[in-house]
Image (cartoon, rainbow, N blue to C red; front, side, top):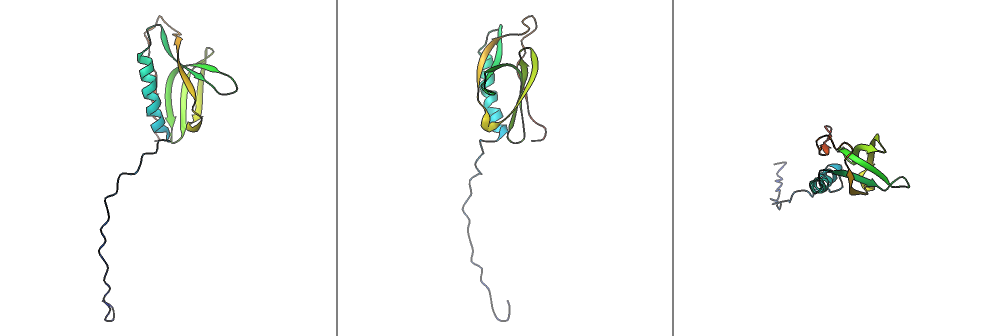
Amino acid sequence: MMDGFQIKVPEISLPEMPDMPHWYMWSDTQFEIIKKYVEDFEASLDQEHEVGLMLTNFGQSILMQVTEIGYEKSVLMVFKGIVNGNPATLIQHINQLSFMLTAVPRSEPEKPKAKIGFRISEEV
């Protein structure tokens, strides 16, 4: 109370707010979606084949035998593997993702078949 004034504050009831929408553009979400597709595709392959990515960038098509897929916070995807017999790493913004999953003959059929590793960035 101030000099005879009484300020009356109205009661306000706020409606329940739904959870904030999940942003499907972030690399962690894209990672989970890609992981599901790769694992499903990998499960459909026989013992003589492994997952390859046909990359459609750089003005040409490049085939990568994939060994690892990961992401860096918040919009970069990282693909590691072999291109033309050499180790390769593709770092790509999630807005530029465009590739085709394909079956390729295993590079070392005498060794046990290895699944693709999925790496989650520690900084996320």
